[in-house]
Image (cartoon, rainbow, N blue to C red; front, side, top):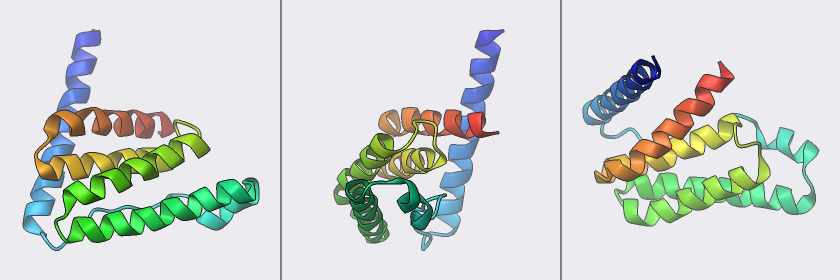
Amino acid sequence: MRNTTSKARRQSLLSGIVLLTLFTFLFPQTKVAIATVTPPSVYRTYLSQSQSGDLDEAKRLNAEAVRLYGEGRYDEAIPLAERVLAIYEKMLDPNHPDVAISLNNLAELYHTKGDYAKAEPLYERALAIEEKAL
């Protein structure tokens, strides 16, 4: 039974990757969606000034990663996306939707570079968080 569930999850994940790849191929001008689910103003209500500064840094890094992705400079975008993920993992619950988005964004960068071994576990973590949210 567990093997079937695992196989179904893997198939679902792979289907999502195929659709994302197809979409990227059909619409090459489309940039990776690096966004936050929760508006920064909501975060600031609950965060210290230092933590709020970290959020601003994550937002800045996100914007820079999107720019680099759009220019095809994936190797430069990856460390920025990793830093954004690290900030969100530090500030938020590990199952927060923004952590899932950051995981997915980083996975997309690796996927675009063809580094599927690094992309897959990130996609899987993002999928697991999204499934818990449902």
